[in-house]
Amino acid sequence: MANQVTIHVDQSAGTINRNIYGHFSEHLGRCIYEGFWVGEDSPIPNTAGIRNDVVEALRKIKIPVLRWPGGCFADEYHWKDGIGPNENRKQMVNTHWGGVVENNHFGTHEFMLLCEMLECEPYISGNVGSGTVQEMSEWVEYMTFDGVSPMAELRGQNGHEKPWKIKYFGVGNENWGCGGNMRPEYYADLYRQFQTYVRNYGDNKIHKIACGPNVDDYNWMEVLMANAHRHMDAISLHYYTIPGEFWTEKGAATGFSESDWFGTLKKALWMDELITKHSTIMDRHDPEKRVGLIVDEWGTWFDVEPGTNPGFLYQQNTIRDALVAGLTFHIFHDHCDRVEMANIAQVVNVLQSVILTEGEKMILTPTYHVFDMFKVHQDAELLYNHTVTADYELDGNKIPQVSVSASKDKNGIIHISLCNVSHKDEADLKIDLRGLTGSQVKISGTELKATTMDAHNTFEQPENVAPSEFTAFKLNGTDIDVKLAPMSVTVLELIAE
Ligand code: AHR
View 1 (cartoon, rainbow, N blue to C red):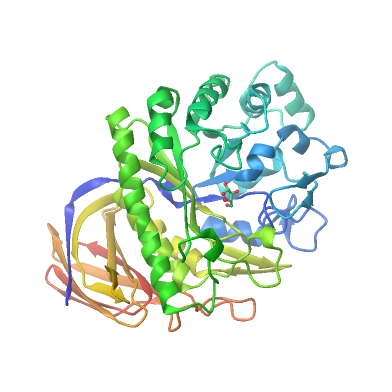
View 2 (cartoon, rainbow, N blue to C red; view 1 turned 60 degrees about the vertical axis):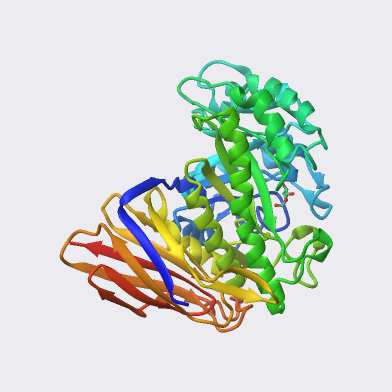
C-alpha cells in the first residue's frame, strides 16, 4: 500500500514548545560524575570541572532545559550538603543508585554554571519525600533572592553575590513511589503546603510543577487536578518504554529479536494514549489549558550492559532508540496544546542517553542524532497533517509503518520528519503539500538509517550510525514522492520562494 500524507502548510496546529526537547540529569551512575563533572584537576579538558566535549555536543543540539538533581535522588538530596568549599561538603551514600559514595562536589553552583555553559534553562527538583518545607523554601531563597537575607548572604559567602534566575521548580519526584510512597490525597495536600513557600522573589517567577502520575495512573491525575490544580503551573508524567510486559522482562539493549524490536516501538506509541487520557482529565478541571503537562521522564529502559553496575542503568543505544525518540517527538508535537516540556532520561551514560563517555572518550548515540535532526522543530508552528499509512505487522500485531510530523519555522521554512519503523521494508510515500505558495521549492534532506536492528555506535566505531544526506525524493508540483529506507528517521527541509 502506498502511504499518503497531506500536509496543510498554511494551517498552524499550535506551537511546538522547544522545551519538548529537554533533558534530565540525575546523580545516578556516571551521569553527573564522569558524564558532566570531572573536576578541575582532571586531564579531561574541562571548564571549572565541567567537561568541554559534552557541553559542546549538547550546545549543538540546542538543549533548551535540563532537569536536576533527580529522579529518586532528588527526594533524598539535601542541597546544603552541596555548597561551600569541597572539603566541607558531606560524603554520603547514594542509596538509590548503586550504594556508591556521593561526595557532593557537584551541587547548586556547579549545576547553575553548567546551565549557563549550555545556555539552557535550569529545572530543579525539590525534596518533598525526606525534606522539609523550610529546606525547600530556603533553597529557592538561596538561588533567587536579591537582597538582605540569611540565604542570600550564604550564597554571597560561597562566591555568588548575584542571584540566579530559576523558572522551573518541581515540588517532589515520583512521590507515589521512591519519593515517599504517598497516596495522591496525601501528596496533594503536601504539594499545596510545600508550594506555598516556593516564593517568587523580585522578578523571578517560578513555574511550579507538581508530581504527576506514573504511566496510566489516571486516579493520581484526577486527585491532583481536583485538589491542587489552582496551585500549580504544570504537572508531570513519567513513562518509560520497555519491550516486555513486566519490569523483570526488560530485555537487552542490543542483540534483541524482531519481536523485541516490534514490541518496543508499539510500547513507545502508547505515549499517545497516555497523554490523551491524562489530558482529558486535565481538560475537565482546567478547560483553559493553563496547567501544562511535563513528561519529565521518558525513554527506553533496557537491561544494563553486561558487566556494569546494575545500579548505574548504563545501556547501549541503537537505531531502535532513534525510532523511539522520533515517534515520541511526533506524539509530543501532536499534543503541543498541553505538553509544554519533556525530558528524556537521561542525558549522559544513563538509560536512553544522547551521549556516552568512557574516560576521555565521548560518543554520540543514534538518539543524539534525532535530537540534532529534529531541533528545527523547536518553537516552530506545527502543521496539520493527515497520514494514511500501511501497517507494519509482526505475529498478527500491527502498528502504523510510517509516522509523520511537519512544522514551519519563523522564516517560513518547512520541515517534515518521517519515521519508517519497519525493520525490513522500505516505505513509498506521497506527500501532498496543500496550500503551498511560491513558484520554486528547494528540498534537501537528512536521514539516519541502519541495516541491522541493533546498529549502534561504539568507542571504536563512533560513526556507525550517523546522519547522511537523503536524496530519495522527487518533487512534482506540490507533491513529493519519497522512498524511506527501512529502520530510518528522515527530515526534509523545504524552502518555497
Ligand atoms: O531515571 C531513573 C529513575 O526512574 C528516576 O530516578 C526515577 O524518577 C524513575 O523511577
